[in-house]
Length: 402
Image 1: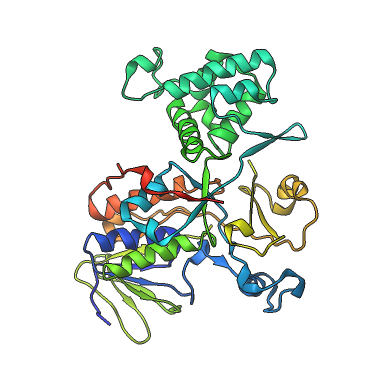
Image 2: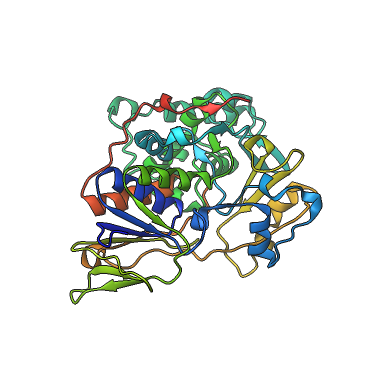
């Protein structure tokens, strides 16, 4: 094994694998290590035996659930926005050739005891039972404004500077009621709390436009796509990309220690057997991780026929996450098995320019990977000094047919 590298990446989570792939393509010599004996880190997908080992301390799941290898259960449940940043990265790196995707059937909101399809366009707003006839007209005008808005064309701004106008002020202009504001903010813009109302409206408008553009991408019932065989396929695909460009992978390496020189900069990695080092070295480290309900099934190759895998996620605000998740769990009906897991969320506090350590933030409770990719792209720019050009032909990716 070579003992000198430009970059050492610790952990094979999705963020770390995207970075190792991008940096390998750039010609850097990358060593990628993981303490586990499988790819994916906290963003892996587990078969039934692995799931039972992790949560029940046993390798014998109930026989009535079927074969272990028929399951791929995501540990960080998310979907992919069909027009989002992750799709652009997949196309930019040509990682799409390693993966197959399926459009997600629907996106819904639970409101006043009923489940409704989320309206994302002016025409859908007119048909939605979520609003009365006068509210529909007001919502339609709002959606037309959002659809027509072009950040570089002042003619579409209607005299509003969305970098200064708050979301609350923009919504007030259209006279929308609190119920409409709630599903626009949380079901369309996919904000996790209400802080967005007092923040510049530009971010919310961009989020709604992304939702609508993603929805139109495959003319399906939702803005999401999902990889066949589970989200654990994503880090493996980027790991394959890194390997094609000379990246070195080492799994099952729990005893690693980052070494620093007298200046406080990373200079190497200590193992029992070898000590990879470099004249100039970057180390990339992972951190570990509104209610959202996800459901996937046999059609996504993650469960046997007749079985569904459902996830209910949120940012826990108390010491009783089971209670916080109950409204979502109650919508599922009869459940064969249920598992609860919580993650602390971390953000780095070090200064990478001083120690050459680049630490990712934890995964959040959003439905998609937009914040994940933004973190990756920021780290890529800090490491390389370059901004990744993601102006790609989105038609290069497609979703599998039924």
